[in-house]
Length: 84
Ligand SMILES: [Zn+2]
Image (cartoon, rainbow, N blue to C red; front, top):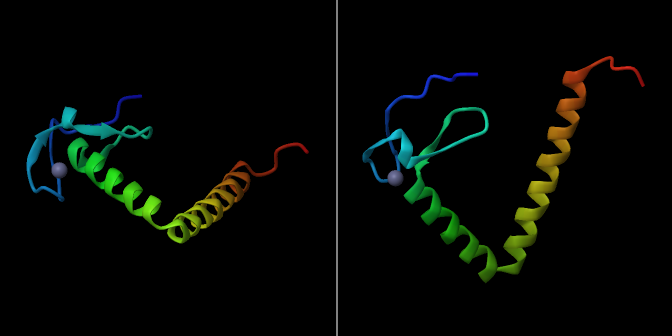
């Protein structure tokens, strides 16, 4: 499968236009919105914040669980009438 990936992309976070190689590629073939540098920085900041606040960590986990449940439900719906 070949997805159309632009050779350059502008990162909305640092506002720099960077080559596609500077962005993470998602499983769906698209490039992540932020460049690798911004993604790394944001995730390390986020994890530092989460570790600093156990309650926040628990909240994030709960949201994640809910999202996964919904995702599984949607996939079941999409499959439709498979033999039980
Ligand atoms: Zn960036």
